[in-house]
Amino acid sequence: MKESTGQRRKERLDRGIKVRSEGLYALMSWRELSYLFFPRLVLIGGILILPLVVPSMYWQRVISIVCIYALLALSFDFLAHYVGLVSLGGAFFIGTGGYLAAILNTSFGLPPLLTIPIATLLGAFICTLLLFPCLPLRGVYFAIVTLMYPLLLARVIEALDILGGTDGILGIESFANRWVEQYFIILIVLFFLFGTRRLVNQDIGLVFRAVKDNDQSVRASGISITYYKTIAVFISSAIGCLAGAYLVHLYMWAGLSTFALDFSILPIAATVIGGAGTLVGPVLGAFILVPISELLRAFGTLRIVFYALILLAFIIFRSEGIMVYGQRKYHQFEKWIKV
Amino acid sequence: MLEANGLMVFYENMLALNNVSIRCDENQIVGVFGANSAGKSTLMYTLSGIIEDIRKKEEMAGGERISVLGNITYLGNEIMGLKPSKRAKNGIVLCPERRRIFKECNVLENLRIGGYLATPAQAKDTLEYVFKVFPALEKLQKRIGGFLSGGEQQMLAIGRALMAQPKLLLLDEPLLGLSPLMQVVLVRATKEIRDEKGVSIIITEQYARPVLPIVDYAFILENGAAVLEGTRDELMNNPDVRSAYFGI
Image (cartoon, rainbow over all chains, first blue to last red; front, side, top):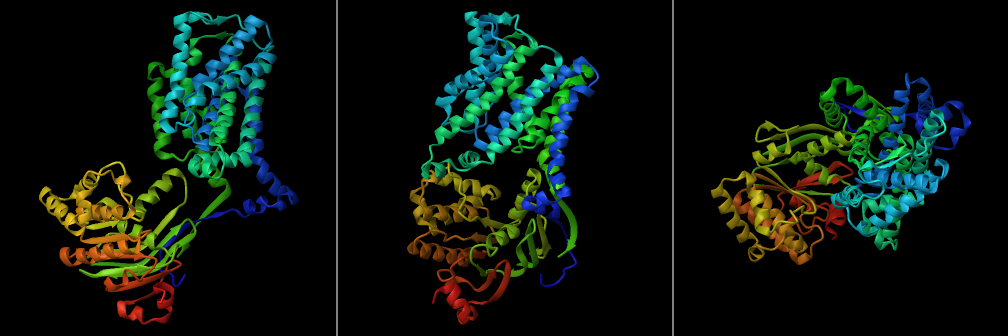
C-alpha cells in the first residue's frame, strides 16, 4: 500500500491454529487436535446426552421426532446443495419407507431389526425408480414432481382402500424399550451426518458438486450425469426411507399422515436456519425448530404465528445460517486495520 | 464530470483496486486498459455502484466481505455509497461485461426495458437514434435476445444503456470476443454516440489498439493500480505501453 489514507476496514483472517491444524502438524499437539475435535465432540456428546437430560418421556419422544426431521433435512441439504436437485420429497420418502416397514412387519412378521434395513433399501430403490424419469429436470420442476408423488400415493391408498385405507396399518411392533428407541435413531443421525460429510469430500462428491455447478461441462468430461444423479437420489431417499421406517415403528401405526407435507417443508426451513450446504447445519436446524414448535404449543392457535415470525427473523437477519456464521467465528478472527 | 480519488476495493483480503484515481471530463472518451485481473471490471462496478449490490448480497450469504473506500465526485456531488439505481437516475449507466442482455425478451423489449428512466418522448427519440447508430438492429426488432450473434448482442447492450439517457456511459469490455470487423463498427458507433449525444464515455478494454483512435485520455491498470495515464499521443509514444497494449 502506498500511503495510509486514514480510512479503516475490517480484516478477516484465518486463525493460526486453523491453518496449522489443516496440515500434518495437527498430530503434533494436543491443542491443535482438540481444536479439530472439540466441535465434533461437543456435537456428538451433546446429542448422546440429550435423552438423559430431558425432563419427561414426552420430550424424549420429541427428540425422536427431531431426529427424523434431522435425517430429512440432511437428505434435503445433500441433494439440494451438493447435487443441485431441489427435492420436496421428504413426505414421499417417509411414506414409502414407512408403509414398506409396516407391511414387512405386519404381513411377514419381520422384527424391526430387519424391517428397517429392508424398508430402507427397498424404499430407496422404489423412490429412485419413480424419480428416475424426472432426473433431467432441474430446480422447481424437480421439486414439483417430488411434491406430487406423496399426494398421488396418498390418494391411491385412500381411493383403492388398500394398505388399510384411511385407517392405516395398525399393530406394528415397537422397539424393545425407549432407550433402544432413542439411541437407535441418534446413532443413525450421527452415522449419516458424518457419512455424507465424508462422501461429499471424496471423488464422487466432487462429481456431485460439479453436476450442481455446470452439468454441461460434466457431460463434456465424459461423465454420465444421470448415473451420478441416480446414485445421489438413492442415497438421499435411503436416508428419508430409513426415517420413515423408524417413524412407523415409533408410532406403531402407518397411515396417510406419513405422506403429510410437513415432512417436505420443515426440513427446508431447518436447512435455511442451520446454514445451507454445511450438512451439520440442517441437523442443528431441526434440533432448534422442532422443539421451538413444541414449546410454542402453549400459545394455542397463535403457535404458527410465532413460529413463522421466528423463521422470518432468521431469514432476514441471519440468512447465511447458524453454521456458516458459527464456522466463520470459530475459524477466523477480525480486526480493524488502517489502509 | 466524474472524478474518483483513492478508490480501494477489497474482496475479503484481496486488493482489487489499489488507490486508483481517475477522472473523466465533459464530452470525453476515457479509456481504461489492463490485462485480466487488473481491476477493470471492479472499477466499473465501483463507478456504477453495482459493487454496493454485490457487497450486500455477499454479506447476506455470509460470503466474502467487500470493502469499498475512496470517494467519487460526480457533477459536484459525492456519490460514494449511493445505490446503483440512484446513480443510473443521475446519468451513470453501465453497459456490463459479457453484455447481460435479457435473453428471453426480443430486441425491442430489451430496449424498452432500458428506457424505464426516460420519458416517453425521450424513449421514442432514443429508440430511433439507436436504430440510426446500429442499423443492423432495426431489422432484428422481433428477434429473441438470446439468439442474436455476439456482435448484435453487444449493439443491443449499448443501445439498452443509451435508452437510460446516460450522461456518463460506462462500457465494460464492449469488444470482448468480437471479430475485428465488428470491433471497427462498434468503435465507430461509440465515437458517433459521443459526438452526437454529447455523452461522456469510459471504456475498458484489454487490448488498446482498436479503441485507441477514439479515446481522448487513457489510464492503464496493472494489478489493481493505475500505473500510467496520459493522452492518446503520450501513451502511443511510450515504448512499454506500445509493446504491452498495442502489440506494435
